[in-house]
Image (cartoon, rainbow, N blue to C red; front, side, top):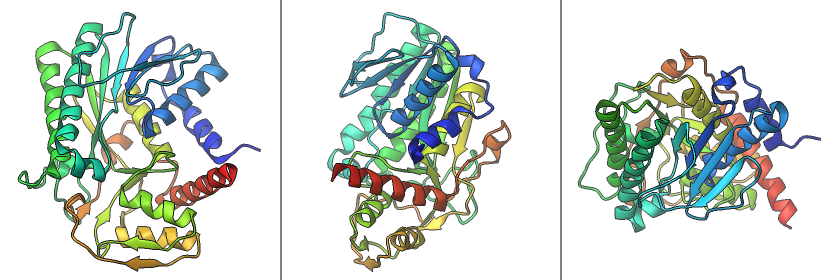
Amino acid sequence: MMNLKTEEIKVIAELPYSWEKIKDKTILVSGGTGFIGTAFVDVIKYRNQKYNENIKVISFSRRGGESSEYLECIKANVKQPLHYEGKIDYIIHLASNTHPKQYAEDPIGTIMTNIYGCDNLLKLAVEKKARFLLASSVEIYGQGTAIPMNEEYCGYIDCNLARSGYNEAKRTCEALTQSYRSVFGVNAVIARFARVFGADKKHDTKAMSQFMDKAVLGEDIILKSKGQQRYSYCYIADAVSGLLKLLLDGQDGEAYNISNDDDGLTLGEYAEYIASLANLKVRYEIENNESVSKATFALLDTHKIKNIGWKPQYSVKDGLKRTYMIKKEQLTNVD
């Protein structure tokens, strides 16, 4: 019987995309061992095994990792100049500090990893004449409104807060990408992800990940705010399908939101639904935390990416239920 993760890989890999564009091509992924990077590699592996598409992935990451037939894992610090002897057709920049705890404990590193990493990978794109895909974030929009934000929206960010370093760094990376297009003619596209969730095996300090970890362990969920913030979310499988769609068909120079179709959930609704999956309760222990986002609304409009043929395969609640089931299975296997 096919497990849930394997089923999702198959669903994404069998989507009616322009896969021929990456047949026999080489794709470099920074952060290839991260949450989105790992799922992306799994889809490419499926395409190679089933359709013999000969797609090579080069993974740059801090840990390196284990190479295989179509995957070359290289230990690299994206903040340092990057070199690769072979051909590269596509570059996907995923490497970034993405955890609130990292923003609080290492705000300088958060900024520098994003900006230096982006600059070094763009230099490599110039050298290799590679198409460049930047993974950006809903955080670039700052304070949103109750109306979903399209790609032209620009909200307020308080740059006097250390927590804003991540937001501002992502904005700078987008500007840097557009500058490399203007000066060097780099073919580039930008993916602006909503809050991505799923069964990540690594420890994650985001509230939504901590809620799920508590539920899987059978512990009540603790909410440290009133939970009134309303956000868009994106299940990991849909994040990867959106990333692939933009890699293949995103228009040069354009940014696209990637998010599930739901009208967004408040953080409280998100916590309550996860608690319901495990028959648990949500406890409110309100505190002031400088590492959390100040955005009250962060809802994304996805008409633009849908106009090039993408749509999410899972609702947020479907994704949460699948995440819970996968993590419960992982916990059982460990035990």
